[in-house]
Length: 405
Ligand SMILES: Cc1cc2nc3c(=O)[nH]c(=O)nc-3n(C[C@H](O)[C@H](O)[C@H](O)COP(=O)(O)OP(=O)(O)OC[C@H]3O[C@@H](n4cnc5c(N)ncnc54)[C@H](O)[C@@H]3O)c2cc1C
Image 1 (cartoon, protein in one colour):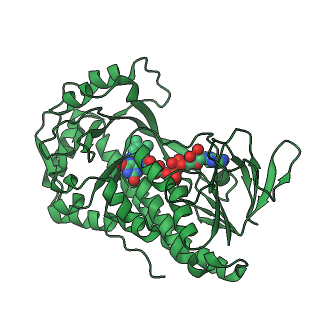
Image 2 (spheres, helix red, strand yellow):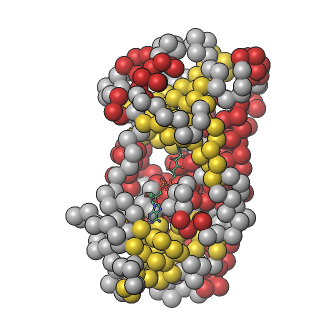
Image 3 (spheres, helix red, strand yellow):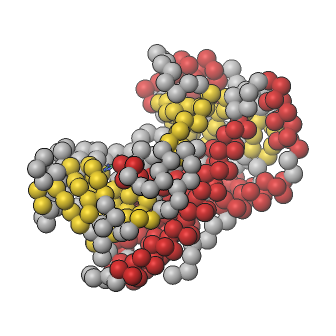
């Protein structure tokens, strides 16, 4: 089976690994001329780990990440350091935190050489499995040629290529989704996030989690080498201009409880970036259109409040691999069987990923309630939430099992 994948992010690479291992001929088109992931961290929970096991990289991922995280005490605090809620240990029992650049290299290392064609932008993907490729940018030195051997040259330097299946993993601002029936577009969640990684180990004394202020939040988690990944979230206009991002983080969070000031101190200012948080403005009616499927953020871009966007992309990749099963190996797969496999992918992935996106949005709404009085009520609710309710929510999210083949 010939499969074209649009985008070499977490979702596209995981799908490429799973499908290539299953026997498909996979080509990944990545618009960026150089394959590189942003320099922040990524939390992967039990469900993500299980998905990585399905595509065959779980053990390598475990080796590359921390086992220390298992001993963490997690939960939510107030800016003065008082605990509002403790997360049950099972919530973080299998949590792994990884530098995104390390994850990206790990995933790329599991693909056959030449699988990814960098510098190639997909300008259109049609339901019949054809794509229009703009090989506008130079590929990187060890990449494959920017144009496939059987590609037909188009009038403006673009070329058409055809696949048995196209997997659109082209992220939040997906080009492919833009022509999808019922595309709701994206919307700003009302808050933006700075992210950073310290350049040296910082002792967290076994404690991690989030601290909630008034329309402001700070989260931290250790990497395996003792450095710490942190994020700082604040309500603001999407297009606000900030001259000095690090100065803004220090002014907002620098007086919060330890070890937050020490983390900021240990983070080089040029490693701190701010991102407006956007999500899909509504649920898509289908992730499948003919021989094209949406995967990862392209299908269900969500707020990062549950740390699940990447995990859901991993689940998508695992389910697509399982659903296609032996068809992946087939040089001339039966279109009817491919259609059934894709319908199964949609049925398994859409309700779950859309439910998690809703849950994540709700957490963000709680974290950014307006005003001191409402924030105090929210804190009280957090304090009084019974542990069993938290456990139920955690199981819903992390208790995912891959489908049978
Ligand atoms: C602040 C923040 C914190 C987060 N924290 C976590 C976390 O802790 N845990 C977690 O699981 N998730 C987290 N997420 C979510 C996670 O980052 C995303 O869900 C995940 O990266 C999505 O991966 P993706 O492959 O679907 O999309 P992307 O990573 O966006 O990759 C899309 C790729 O497609 C390429 N592309 C786009 N258009 C084209 C085109 N037309 N042609 C060719 N290539 C194209 C892009 O260049 C890119 O490489 C967080 C998100 C944010 C914003």
